Image (spheres, rainbow, N blue to C red):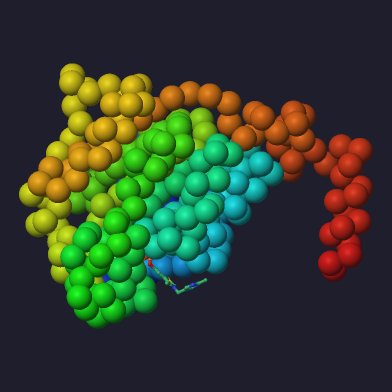
Length: 286
Ligand SMILES: Cc1ncc(C[n+]2csc(CCOP(=O)(O)OP(=O)(O)O)c2C)c(N)n1
Ligand SMILES: [Mg+2]
């Protein structure tokens, strides 16, 4: 039986009390719950404090450029369907620099899970406002307070008919790991937006701030199959902030739709008549 220790990677370099620790534990716990072995998992990250998560895990990893988690994750899944592919990014990484990839990745619908460490700030670069920073938040750069309308990632994803849209909180590891497990099981692009404090640079959205506001959507009075209701729910932000699966629908994934993959994953097509072309291309770059 696999355990969380089997996924243990290098020494962490996050600040004490960082919300990323809860995320790291939740990702490992979800993989263990699903009985995944380290060699069956690929973690792709971008740049940021969030981008370091794969360094602290033992499994296949790929550290991409800032905002560029989704393209390599999509490619890896097309090449090897057997892999469980998780893309990990920050709020700046995914919704700012990587905003276009986020939009078009959802439209393309590869079978990957996008996990966003949403601390509502650029942590690694020392505290500039991100696309999800709340209105009025003061930073060293936004000294008069943020005045741009915050990007609502859940509403954006639901508007694009993303097949799985959810939000967790790094202060509730059990709930977060069960969301991540559900997202991995979903076939197609699944989003787990995770609220998490940055204890150094975000002095507004602290652990206490989130804890006073978050509540879980309950199975008895909320059903994630109604897209219009999900969109309405995604607009709730302020005194009360909902957590859980906002929206889920099934449908064909990128791998189902792409004719080149009709005969299986690219990695398994070594005897395909076109494989020689690929080998010639590889030789050109050797
Ligand atoms: C193309 C490019 N632009 C800008 C940067 C500088 N940069 C590195 S990380 C980052 C923002 C990180 O914020 P976020 O994605 O929210 O991650 P966090 O550190 O908060 O986890 C920026 C602007 C970069 N590395 N590459
Ligand atoms: Mg951030």
